[in-house]
Image 1 (cartoon, rainbow, N blue to C red):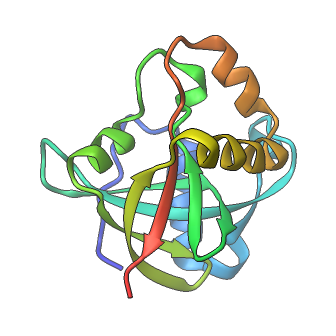
Image 2 (cartoon, rainbow, N blue to C red):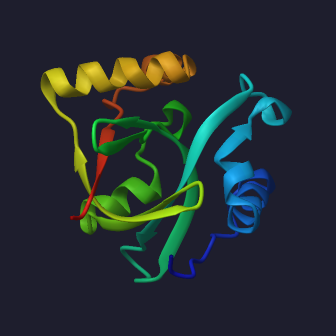
Length: 151
């Protein structure tokens, strides 16, 4: 996986989780969200996108579920009115990398639509119920992204 910049505006717990994931991927993969107000231990991956303005790699830990051959993530930004920067990076360049535990994948991101989106949204809500609360807080439809490994 490429070296990636972590923007300084990230909360320290995000930066700490990235460092832990890079140092101890199998342990950090199942991350305990309880210390930051979450529901407990949940699966995370590291997503590395290319910054649409900087052209630099950007890394962020995200909750995910593996569905079929792909990995599903949600661009919730906690229900904020705007999309997260990493999602805008994917719109600009859907080619990216992920680390899942100690496994690395080059992937292409696509936005799930229609019935697929509804099904995958429910898969993610079953993992992390606050996604429904985030959707209720915003007028935008929160994107559901499928990361498909390159063959």
